[in-house]
Amino acid sequence: MIYLKTEEEIELIKLSAQVLGKAHAAVAEWVKPGVATKKLDAVAEEFIRSHGGIPSFKGYNKFPSSLCISVNENVVHGFPSNYELKDGDIISVDGGVLLNGFHSDSAYTYPVGEVSQEVTDLLSATKSSLYKGIEQAVDGLRIGDIGFAIQDFVEKRGYTVVRELVGHGVGRSLHESPEVPNYGKRGKGIRLKEGMVIAIEPMINLGIKSVVQEKDGWTIRTADRKPSAHFEHTVVVRKGKAEILTTFEYIEQVTANTSLMVEVK
Image 1: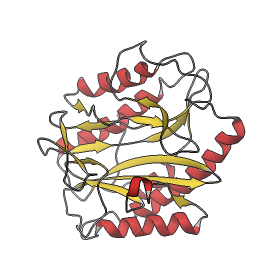
Image 2: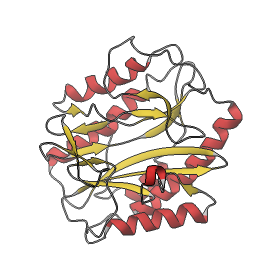
Image 3: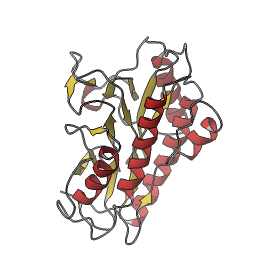
Image 4: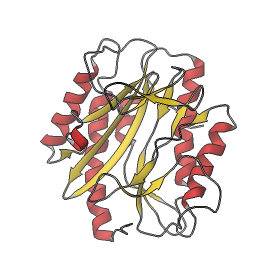
């Protein structure tokens, strides 16, 4: 069942997304060598709760943390831990906020210190592909148009798209219908309708597209252990042009003119 959101519900999701965007920025301040990833999780949880929200992920199917933190070859669903970030790492920070009965969901991948040009280019292409997908989230187009736009953009640049993990609807539940793959064919899949709220979240690998699940039952990593990047926005389908409900604005106030910055090209 796909729930179309009213304008009032969309406004509530935007309020949730503002708290999430600012929580991401609070985390970004701590993304540097020597910081344990569980510290990032604590910063996010404290910020979200102090602003009236609930971390969407904590307790979701027994997930133990407020953030999914995935470093280097880990694609998504990594646990915050005692691991201390090192120069040359990349870190995906994925979070959600429940506020006023509605969830928001977004993710950002940061370079830590000095990373290789190859990895810098992967981050830039993944972030850029997110916006290519969002351009297709328009009333009357189809889910496959979103996936095709992402897949076409990154594969032309030599990267691969994870198949096993996809975007999703967002609303009163963190994960709703429909599924939103990051690959697909133009004109295929369900028709998009104004008021659909979806999370678009390309997960793009430097190497092969295959992934494996670690023994913890959550963490997904690349099969060849090459890096993977992940960016995500929650958006609402509109006539003519999609509206992005989450925001990277606060993150980018922190990362501007620093080594954390990821450009869209």
